[in-house]
Amino acid sequence: MTEPACSTPSNLEPTLSVYDAIRRRRDVRAEFTGVLVPQEVLDRILGAGHCAPSVGNTQPWDFVVVRKPETLDVFAEHVADARRRFAESLPEDRRATFDPIKIEGIRESGMGIVVTYDRSRGGEHILGRHTVDDTGLFSAVLAIQNLWLAAAAENVGVGWVSFYDEPYLTELLRIPEPVRPIAWLCVGEVAEFQQVPDLERFGWRGRRPLADAVHLEKF
Image (cartoon, rainbow, N blue to C red; front, top):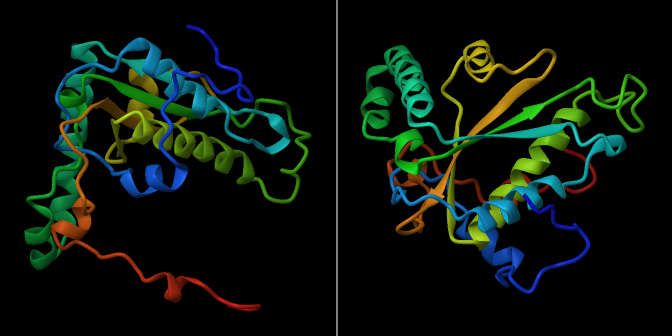
């Protein structure tokens, strides 16, 4: 794998603007074609994730690329069980809304990228983390956002799976302590990007207006 330099853009990289990538980005579940992402495209996407800023320059993330069908099948079954448990916990009206919503494309995408967070990387004396410990975790999430926007620019779909038990995924992928898996991302080529996010289309919850989220001087 060739590691791209964060400060040196390649002529082979797509030219989609960051604003267009943000608008295109969707949590993909049903639109995967099953075609695997070419290695050179995957390298660029992972490189974008690895270029994320991090507290104290600790770069506390790692990326576990999972392609074995047997691993995808086992994890998909685990996620299906977690989905059933969540559905059973819902009031009847919310369950009726939730039932048709597809929550993952683990098998359909053909590949998972598991992003991990290692709080111990860089030791205990981390510049910038002294008073807000979560800045380490935030750094790993920034890597996910970088990866996701790069994928959107490459016309590659990403779906974040959060219906799993963390100890189960840790054991499945033999992730050593104290490293945590913080995201399973389904990654693959897509037939299309939905114009409206699934949770809005299916009536689970709409998006707040920007005006409701912006406050001046004080909350």
